[in-house]
Length: 481
Image 1 (cartoon, one colour):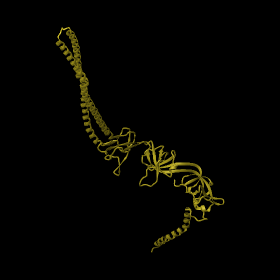
Image 2 (cartoon, helix red, strand yellow; image 1 turned 90 degrees about the vertical axis):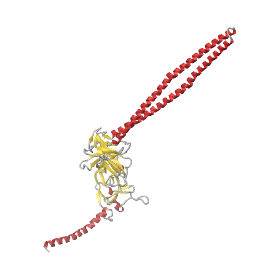
Image 3 (cartoon, helix red, strand yellow; image 1 turned 180 degrees about the vertical axis):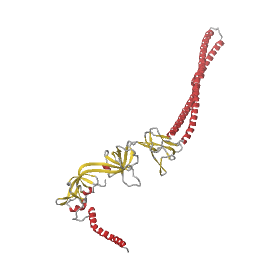
Image 4 (cartoon, one colour; image 1 turned 120 degrees about the vertical axis):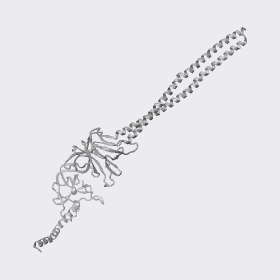
């Protein structure tokens, strides 16, 4: 075996031996530190400590969210097809296009509606022809009634009144003749037979008078009423038919106008200025981007036109932290797509009720919180992932200790601090906490050592007895913010 090979072999054989000795030397140190950190160190061993220090206290809440437009316009499909609820998309403006009010966005297939319009136009023409026919019939009925009242009836009444006048005159003359004959017969100038002839003439005249009066009353009370009933019935019927035909014609024209309006709505135009963001269509268990060949239906959002001058972050805050968040709190925003940029904003809205939970997500209630961005950057797009730091509280020059160095005991709080005579339990007055550090109002001094795990040493210091059987220390302060 060559000398070089023997040297390499001896070195490789010594490596495991050296590593074993190093591990054996480090075991006591690692175990001691582990037990101290876990609060399991034996009595008499020095605890892991820290110093109560002064500094600026910051309570921040870090949450995730998505960029959204605070002011945006949604363009929906407003077409109602009478035969098929699905409408095919024929043409779409490219996403990212800047548009002004009235600019073209999307063209939907209107061929089915155009066929309906052609059919409806024929229906409208027929309905209008029926209106013209019934209007003529109604006018003819009006003329017939007018002609009867001013013609046939007027002549018949005039004849009846003339006959009645003539009959009355004949009765008057017959009465005069009979009266004269009676005087002549009393003086024997005429015979009795001549007197009876005059009497017969009077009775005949009276009969003619009664007949003329009856004819006039029959004309007024029977013939006229019967004729007017027929004429009025015809007039009312034609009027009703005309009204129905006009209503039908109006309805037909309304349907035609509605179809033409639907055809116009097949061409979607921008209602406001903005940048085109195409929506996604969800059907048949799939999500499809709005593009030619896809189908849509009424009320579905096809295009969004966000106003990039007003942007916001829609974040969700868990319920154990929502009590700290108030409207007006300042916030710092960072975007994953623009990591070098730092934006500023403020909390403007906190939903009163939790957001709907995902069936496949964790059972944690979250509240939607809206953070308005003061000065949006060019290139920001809705849907971008944002990291929001909500600045809940900021205090300058505050005495602080780590949150785990505070021991809740009953309704009070203590720190196990190093005093002149050794370790002692110091009752402390607490300020706000951010989960990592806690502000100490009083009880310990700046620079004083405090135990990091006071619960492990509570039996080695003097603490007041808790009142009541089964009393236990309070839970540790909320951490993890």
